Length: 166
Image 1 (cartoon, helix red, strand yellow):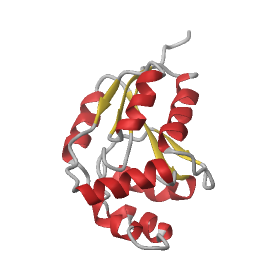
Image 2 (image 1 turned 30 degrees about the vertical axis):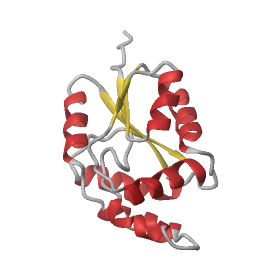
Image 3 (image 1 turned 180 degrees about the vertical axis):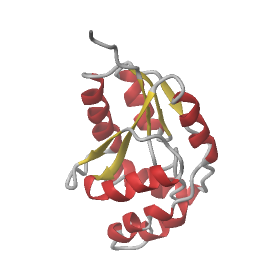
């Protein structure tokens, strides 16, 4: 007897489930200190609205995570998810040397996932990523619960879209 898999709800990390603002200062100087930026990720506080939404979706769906973080951050990321009470789920990360814009890298990761699973919803804070997901036909919730200053917003957008790093 074959059992049908539950659909999957897919969540982003930085700016959706985790608050990365405390480490943005590593990206404001020249050269940018990407290693320190990612080393500080385990100290990210959770974003209550994102965690609550993920837990609500987990009642109906499996959870999965698509992030622009590089593969080398996997262990820290899995530990962070567990430490903040988020259900275990598949974690799709960009390759360590993949510097494409987040809207391209994350869309590709989600399309790979969707080839094997039904995606019920995808939740992300990056407007360009959300637009790419919508264009690909996915139902999207745009995470708008992490308040950021104009400087922080510009730093995040540059990291995600121009430098393809998160």
